[in-house]
Image 1 (cartoon, helix red, strand yellow):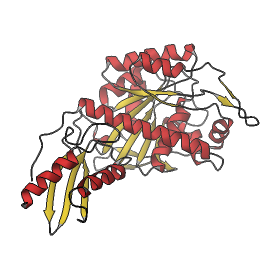
Image 2 (spheres, rainbow, N blue to C red):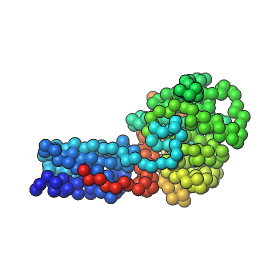
Image 3 (spheres, rainbow, N blue to C red):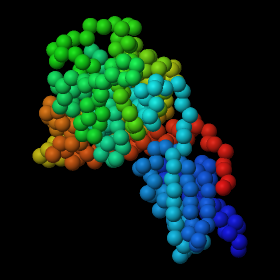
Image 4 (tube, rainbow, N blue to C red):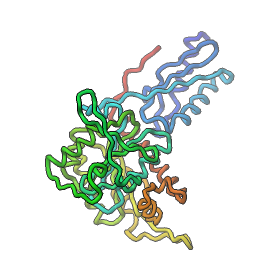
Length: 364
């Protein structure tokens, strides 16, 4: 068999390997960019829907097994690159940010900011570069959650004389918040366009640099900041945080409806304070009701990304300025948020697969 025919056979074998998260063969995804045979070595070039960090190793192993069916002794080199996903107009400050996620709730008091902070750190723990923009101008939480109270936002001037903020870095996450600008007990007395203007200052005049993920921790409700974000920033999607009781679910429904109207995809639901586990006997109670997030996910035709417990460690760690996933006693929270991060990334990839038409297949 000549080299070209063998390379084509190898290509067909690899094309049948399924993406473990999308459940679709690589051939249907136009992900097999090229197969080359060089000096007895098989070179496989893949172009995958991003982000690929969580599945690259698993997928490479599956491809090696497929190639071994034809050439069991041949060395294999696999080169993976992420497919570029088209997106709308982006502020220059965010030009190097790959995926932008809103974390919203519609209702206050459901633990959204705590979830956002720990999700950001969990993504960083997995090796991603992550930023968190605390968009709650009235009640910024990030300074407390990251132990950064009273620390001002440092700044520099760019070549045009504009002041550019430098985000704080803590637990592997770049953090910017209105709380770094205001005094600790100072209130932000703002409304309408002025409120949106302060928010966009955090977006456009902060040096975010290269990031895999930028999370926007949104304030409760469906107000000016939410609409400004949807209009000015090409969001990948929104993660909605709720508690199980109907009172919270009703507000999240309204939040989901707002994002739907501005064409922002709902990636899934996080049910916080889902249950309480007795530390003595292990009995599980559901103080705010059971399965509310699951029912809401079905209603909105999205997925339940995770159910997080009502855990005293979350409160204690937050007050100490340490995300629970970094707390010495937080091994169980690390596992929960690592799984949540994996599920969020999976839904990002599924969203891209649904909405981004793959480029033409290129034969080299």
